[in-house]
Image (spheres, rainbow, N blue to C red):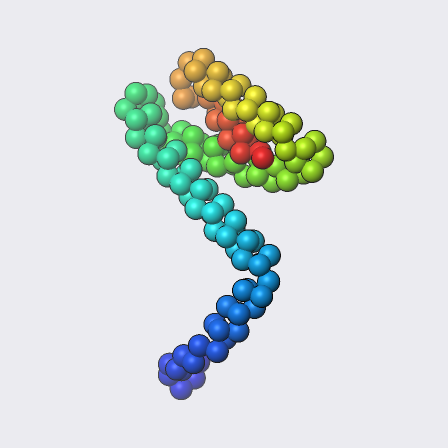
Length: 137
């Protein structure tokens, strides 16, 4: 970038844009990647927002930042693993079976979360990971 700021002619953008319209597969891929990123960020925001109420209910979470980090990161880590396994499960077992397994995982995670004695218990960490695995399909 010697010589200052170069002018923008737009030819590279027009070429890329015309290529994407000629190949609709690229548009579908970009759209689904964008929606996936949006939903992943939204999920992280919802978990972080729920953390405010968790901190009010459980004083141990309010005092220990590592517990807050664990709550958010376990859910995100479970979602990453569920998304990684989802494609394989759909190919191997079919979409309907994968959705049923994801429903059962989500239900099991919700039951374990409801029965956990507090946020410090290992049951709480395991249940948020299991519930996040419900992103499987």
